[in-house]
Length: 198
Image 1 (tube, rainbow, N blue to C red):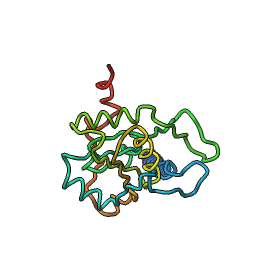
Image 2: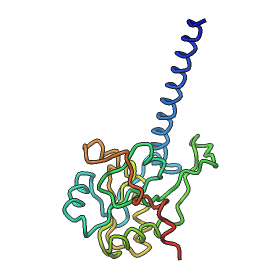
Image 3: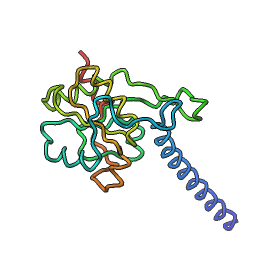
Image 4: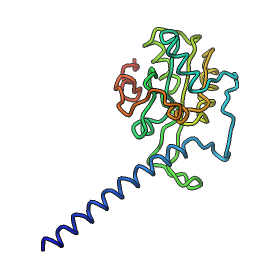
């Protein structure tokens, strides 16, 4: 009887370990899928303005000019929850959200939808920091593919100096720049956005 019980416990442990690893692998695959452009395998990582930095350049600039610039992570909160975010960012202003209720049959994953409050989120963090739309804004996504679209949208909204991090969070971690899975609540726009409502 004990032997059967012990085997069952081992099997349950192995099943739990397998499920955990499968979920982690799925989250990583989803984060990679998010950066693929609809219908295109590759797209430019440079916004229309031409303003861009590598993760090393962005880290050095933010450390030197922390009070005069805004550094934002524009990934979905689910990505940040799964794989962390740079410690130097001023906040998370998601450009797109993963919609877990809609399926993309072509990509075989959940659909990504534009965040209608993206510019509002960036404005919120600018105001919080006490700087204007003419200040440098540096945005980072996973690999640098989403950021140019976000930068173009911000430029259309009147932002003057929006830089994208061309190697994204993947480059940030590869270069061993400071990051953490421990998140700060006051940097999550989706949690503090109620403060922006009038």
